[in-house]
Amino acid sequence: MKKVKIALLGVGNVGSGVWKILSTNQREIRKRSGYDIEVSKILVRDISKKRPLDIPEGILTTDINEIVNDPTIEIVVELMGGNEPAMEYMLSAMRNKKHVVTANKLLLATQGGELMQVAEEEGIMLYYEASVGGGIPVIHGINESLTANRIESIVGILNGTTNYILTKMSLDGMSFEDALKEAQEKGYAEADPTSDVEGFDAVYKLAILSSLAFGTKIDVDSIYREGISNLKSEDIEFAKEFGYTIKLIGIATEKDDVLQMRVHPAMIPNKHPLANVNDSYNAIFIRGNAIGDLMFIGRGAGELPTGSAVVGDIISILRNNVDLSSTIETKEINPCKTTSSMDETICEYYIRLWVNDRPGCLGEITTEFGKHNVSIASVRQKGERGSYVPLVFITHATPEGDLHKALEEIKKLEGISKIDNIIRLENF
Ligand SMILES: NC(=O)c1ccc[n+]([C@@H]2O[C@H](COP(=O)([O-])OP(=O)(O)OC[C@H]3O[C@@H](n4cnc5c(N)ncnc54)[C@H](OP(=O)(O)O)[C@@H]3O)[C@@H](O)[C@H]2O)c1
Image (cartoon, rainbow, N blue to C red; front, side, top):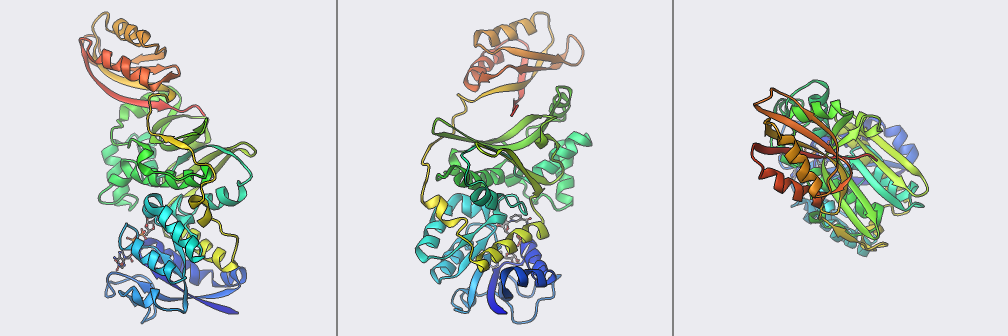
């Protein structure tokens, strides 16, 4: 049996999963890869930290040079996260002719072009299946199995933390704040939840998927972003009344060579499979011109699911498969324009206003909508006449720019306290 030495940069959540899978599934991995894999070094910040793993002495190190300058180590697995020093260490490993596996969505989304360029220059493999959807083999799916298709759209529930929070709000009637607290207690959300709840994490993942699916370089700043922190229990309840479920989704669509990518909460019809993806599960719904509709669903995080994708990448390298990832972004096969403007986006909208329920108020609002060609499909009002009450409109499909012009005028009407929320309806 051939032997290969690898090194891990980090043995936190994902690194522990990788360590466990490599030992538990040793026999299967040997058979499938043709190699006996030895983890010869693991980079950590703090060697003295107590760890729940049985790692033999001499493997942990705080010195990256013991890894990048060791010619016997052939694969470096980056599981530290963050920008620096992860970027510097990966580049250094690649310059020293080591294949690299990473789960770092932040780096791939923001500096993936440079990583792929260096991988190409050095003739090494760079794999990153775990960076999107944890254990879900979506990158392999797009790069390999769907490669005969022109991808028309991708719609994904790309963040497990926000999906857990929204599930709790929807099924258990929790407030956003209580659901977030529970997610933090269960370890699904970080102490600082900004990256998840404000949609940044989903933006990084959508950027990685879009670059592969549409064969173009993506600037993460061109992706429109809204998080879920503005959602109220009322929105969840109204959505249910209209037959929808609210999810934080990432959408990428290409039309007439213009690629639009956006991350925001959306009302999904209850009959659509994405509406039924609950808890911390992720799902990615892809429409290709040959395959039609296809959905991947699975655990988007966690040590073993994410570790499964990482070890899968290591085995792919050992099998010396065709290069799955490194050539696609650097050689743009479909350089297309991207737009972050939402004005031309045509959707149906849910609008929740807070109004003083005086006679004639509803008529004045609908007149303003009419003046801007916004046609109303449905209206709901709750509360006592004569007081401030929530008033909800569902529009027919309309350009977002027209909707905002109408709302600017509606805000000026007497008795309109505020426009509390606007949510797009996505009827795929
Ligand atoms: N957690 C998930 O479910 C998940 C899912 C998909 C993708 N990812 C991605 O996987 C990566 C790792 O996530 P994680 O949750 O496993 O992180 P984590 O639990 O925080 O573990 C990070 C590990 O990296 C080490 N480390 C961090 N900075 C270091 C530095 N400057 N020098 C040396 N070692 C350093 C830490 O060392 P110490 O142990 O000494 O502190 C720790 O072992 C991230 O890119 C993340 O986005 C995670």
